[in-house]
Length: 451
Image 1 (cartoon, rainbow, N blue to C red):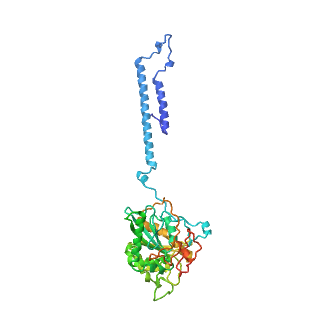
Image 2 (cartoon, rainbow, N blue to C red; image 1 turned 135 degrees about the horizontal axis):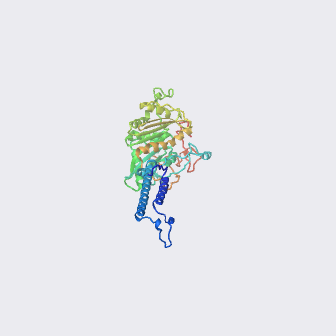
Image 3 (cartoon, helix red, strand yellow; image 1 turned 180 degrees about the vertical axis):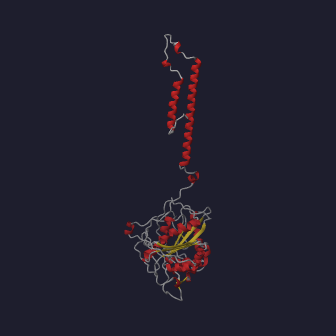
């Protein structure tokens, strides 16, 4: 570098060296245009330069020029190295591992009712059917109820399926599940009004094995593979449907992986106190002891148990909120502190310990009770499927429209007299909505929220 030369950038280096190079060349070489010539065209004797001196000047000039050129190249190389180092240190380039990782898929959520749909008469107890059966194939009849199986996917390499068997309010629940499920198959069973209709249908140890065998048969028929089978199974119920779940747990709790009860589990009044003052201490497990026992296994981490409850008071038997309080007390868990929620049917408290999940929500009327059907999204999408690592079904298939169904099969395989005449649960109660995109739901008639 030339003395006193302090370039500020690379362009200054090139410009400055170029100027010095031209100056030195002019200094150490002869300019022919300045030399006088005689008449013969030869250089005058007074201006002839001795050959040795002339060559020496040229050698010196070109040598300095070469040195300056090398200096310019070295300076440019240094600048290139500095630029590369800057890029490595400051530019954010994704690693190969990051580039190969698949983009996380968006979390599946349920579409909500717009003001226009509410003006048309849809609501919490009369949900709108946004996707029909969605990515599921058309229903297949079972010994009791119907099954919707994914059109493609939703099974392991050896054709193991995760299955949700739901009791009471199947259509409204299907409308939610079809939008959010990752890959579970869905069984819907409606047997009429009141928990007695459900418990009676599954009395004794033989009813559940027969239903499960018919589910396996439907999975084989849909998949076309003789290996198809139930891998995991969850019993879910809304309102009165818990009667069937409790009866199945009496004999087959070991073969059940999960239970989800949506505002539907009613214990009994303690016979020593009766209704008393309506406190948890006035309640005993009584007839729902098998369900309490299953919840205890979930607390230990062996099973999955989800129970949602509201503020609805049935008056004649303990509410779901009192039943939840009794359950938590029997399990040795403190009662949760209920928080105020700004939403009409918002969550007020939650207990989540290992496999046990007990969630409380605001509301003491019929719409509040109906909203619990929609909580199947959180139970299946956020609890069951992640725990089971449920294989994903293909959601890019043409969606199956909403079904128009005939009589549901009863526990004996025939049409049940108490069953609704169509898939819509509400039509059996004289609902004015009978089109295929309606699913009016009703509660236990002994409850003040019944339709």
